[in-house]
Length: 296
Image (tube, rainbow, N blue to C red; front, side, top):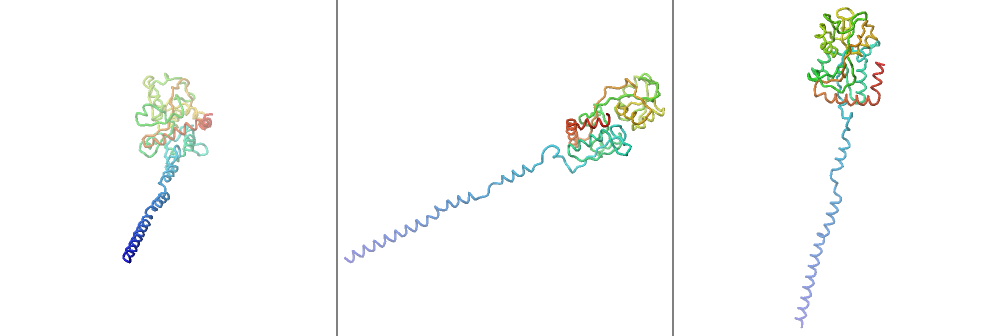
């Protein structure tokens, strides 16, 4: 009896121990199951991908148009000394003219800085070709010959014809009267090209000068009987300069556009800005104001 009771108690004790072991195993497994929510929370709290930084970079990109120009660069633009009314020194000593005002208006429109250097026609070309100037504005006619020799032109900003002028008291009435005579021209100009195209047909000889005032003086002083010049320049010089010259009627050619010029593809940006600004000042009326100011 005691032996049976002892066996019964031992069995109960063993069952209790087994139940305790099962409970411990179950409780030790529970933390592993509860770890999943913690991982999920960590994923939720993780910082977002760096997309916002890319968005900020986009908004800080420079705008197109004038805002993209290099504001630190000062473009050097060469011009003539006297080519009235396009560039000349007025009575107050200020350097003024159509070309001067057009460059100023375009620079303001496009937002670039520049330095205008009055060098003379030949010196302006040489400075551009040597890289000492970035561009040139000096009433330069756009011609195929110049393009072939390396000139890169803007859109035309003024259309001008060329004409012949003689002393006020001269009896020369046309090209036929120039036979065996001396005629003055300015080196490298469209006026010179016009005279060169006529000299063999009409039998006259050309004398070349580096600037317009010296050329005019040659005619007024009798060293030459006539000169060839751009019509608006000649008309303005006669009107305001008291030159004692007159334009011979019927001597004008068909004319050509004036253009701003560069001589190196590195200056394409300047050429593009000139074209864009020219279109804008023509559209907003500023161009017409400039022309009216000097030509009426």
